[in-house]
Length: 184
Image (cartoon, rainbow, N blue to C red; front, side, top):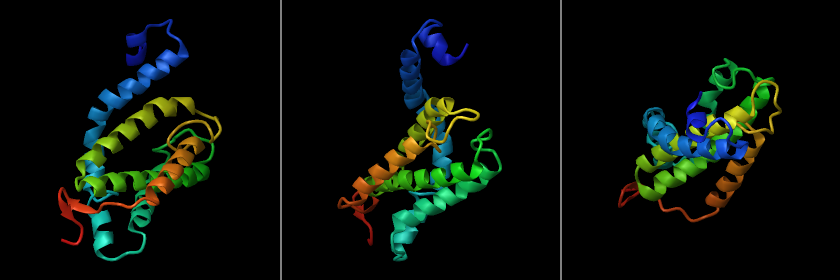
């Protein structure tokens, strides 16, 4: 019996199971996932040294570039079957994952630059991974179509693109560290 089933019981409705699963993923899963997210972020992924170095170097569209680099970094794991191992189309999963990574990269970069700290981005990254990988991965197993759930699913990619466009059109506060604007 899984953790969710032990919390809600064997006769719970599918909606109750989903809601409890998301709640557990967003809390307990986030705390557990912070180790991996901190490693990925501090290794230079989207919100740490890569983004600020791209900005300092004057690279055009640094948030887009960092999101693309972050997404491309994951693609070998998709093609090797480490991520989405039993899916019917690695190429479709890779394309949708890349779009999702760029969208998520905008959100993480905005949080990083608004606060001047990588910690809010690490928590958000961990929460995103936990909820998407636990609640949504179960919705898309085996030969399920690409538009069903998961991190590489079209609904997640579409939502992330919309959020990225909304965030990208706003004026950003650019902090290198809390209280320290970029360029100082």
